[in-house]
Length: 477
RNA sequence: GGCGGCGUACCCAAGUGGUUAAGGGAGAGGUCUGCAAAACCUCCAUUCAGCGGUUCGAAUCCGCUCGCCGCCUCCA
Image (tube, rainbow, N blue to C red; front, side, top):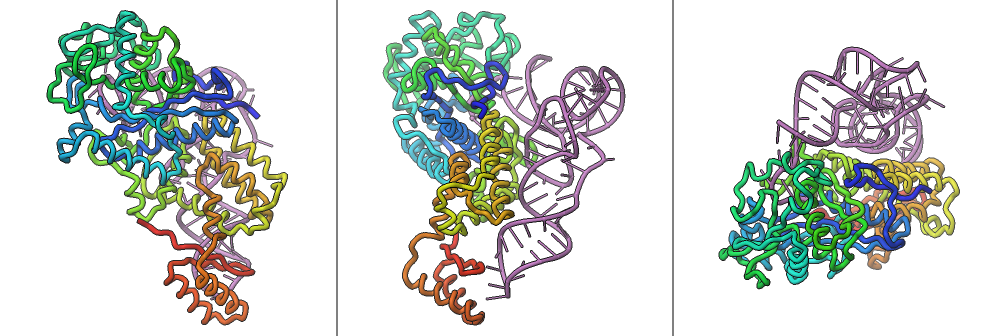
């Protein structure tokens, strides 16, 4: 089997992945900003993060995964002096910033749960406001090494000193001249150059969240949280750092500068970036635009939210994906296909110790597709064909294989099977038995009555040759 | 102005130099079925935005044209 390969934005190539200290993989993924609900574009990114993590685990790696939660420092306009977005929402809703953040964090966790996205457990799911001391310590190192300078409006990182005027940005491949920084926005006159960015912001008395620092009361710049928390939990050089494509030119470029400026060591070995979910008009879905679809919209449209996970697998993470309710409905048919198979699987079939030998081909195709830069469309195709082949051959000894694939697909097929193979109330089981008997006696009138009774109690009934299966009716929110 | 990406069937999309252009959805026909629901079979792009070029061979490489989008400012 070929080892895992991934596209590294640093080299702009698909590379064989080799962690620094196998089998451990240190992985930092950019998490949510918590001043609004997460839209489906955000959720696509987290499905991607989850898929990457699960694929690494499938390859036998021990993934130490950190995700940050940005609950301070995102400005509405200018990166240095605009209003903090969390605070803006707090003012609008009459809450404290902490309350706003708590609310949207809880919602984020619920959304992830519905998509079977496994989040790191705290403290590895880490909040910026809980790590201000780490950030201050890091800024001190940067200043000591001569890359930061203190002014009345804040501490800034001196970009040109770090990389030189003409050097091309490592990630964005643009020279400083090409970036036209400052052309379209106002910046602090204290900055030596428009490219410089804030590490610590001072003298913003209206800002609600403030901390004491060696330079005075203030709050951290946006980029510093990721460097500080990444180093805190994963060390000064990590294996993988992921985020959206939009972070390449500013956020990640600046993270590299400040981190390597502070430590003198490489910050990240593999930078991985996911592409956007786009609306039907082909335009990017983003928080700053105003209206955007959220996970709850799917349930409102009668779609199982988990279908969104499979919908995401339909395109590679580096390709734009066009969102529409119909496209998610199409994915929901695939979800039902897997689910039906799992639910109807007899115990004898599920408990077979070894799967049929022909399943290996699909297993292999699945893993090779994922190991080839996370080609989820091909992996999904292999999984679908595995099930199709089982039906075709009338040989359902594929459960061990399917469960293995589900470790990445993340549909929870095992739990789905238990829905039809679990314990039901005695009266429900009795009704089912009575109905099976009526059917066997070809008393279809009676069978139909009993079906109605079961449905009234909230159970769905499906017949097959020898008998029937029942399951609680899916609640559509 | 700079940087980057995209255009494959009705829809979502793989494939990026070489046998018949994955897979799914929708659609059409069929098998099975008491009903309902599944499932299975068959069909569904001589063609990859357009035009040139390179090559024994291109959806895949190069050039041009048209159309669309992202980033350079908070954004996954």
